[in-house]
Length: 307
Picture 1 (cartoon, rainbow, N blue to C red):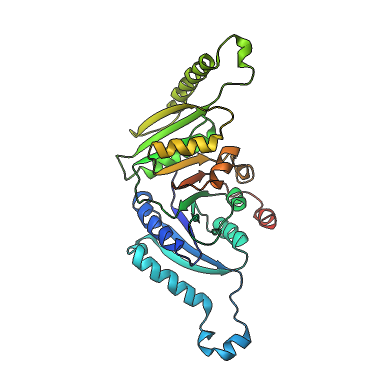
Picture 2 (picture 1 turned 90 degrees about the vertical axis):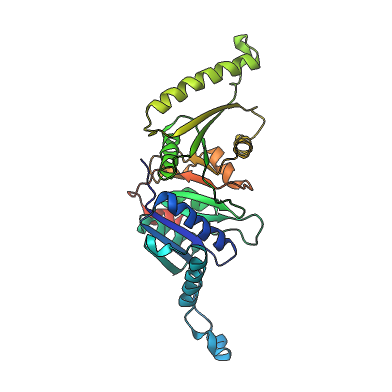
């Protein structure tokens, strides 16, 4: 069973921080984390001498001022944050490198970052970093709802989909009414017409095969009585599977969309998979959780240098 005991939240001192803090508070009820790090990374904390000479009041250390601001926001939007061993950290350096370094050094299970569409800024973490952190990454949109009734999982029956299911079950530990929707998207293979079958006939064959795979897939999971709904959706090859999956998640009124990274360890997990990569690029309104199987035995320095 997955657990998210150590959480890190990337803040950038914009209005997005309020959304992230509120959503972290909301998830903490379900995940019961042992430690939460709210992290802000500044490229440079120094203030030029000529500025402090003209404006003596700004001599107050910037990191302390930022830390106080972060804690003030947390008290407003996460009143019981102290129950989770919360720490507020202001770090100097490259945002991507330091986020990678901290997620590794603090043995983080889940990294929360903002996914901006409406507000200014590109967000605290790019797609490139999502590839390289060894922990799971939850992208939170600006318009997120504080609901956790239904989780949709992009399922293709491989081990990384199993990790996504185990992750979803962790979210349901304190929510007995949670419904998990498994969505398998299939297409007919190129050259199907040589079998003498029509496209519709071969699609039915593919669906029948997928239903059998799903039955075997569930047999290897300890669902612990969770309600699991299956969806088998046929997608024309000319339509982006990521768009198709997202539209289906909207139709199902999913509160979180989950997709597994393809790697078994931190190195191979850099290959998120084409559908997951495309999902991250969409202007989505549903939180997107990229699930990774955390592995600490890798060359951190090599990854940092490549960021």
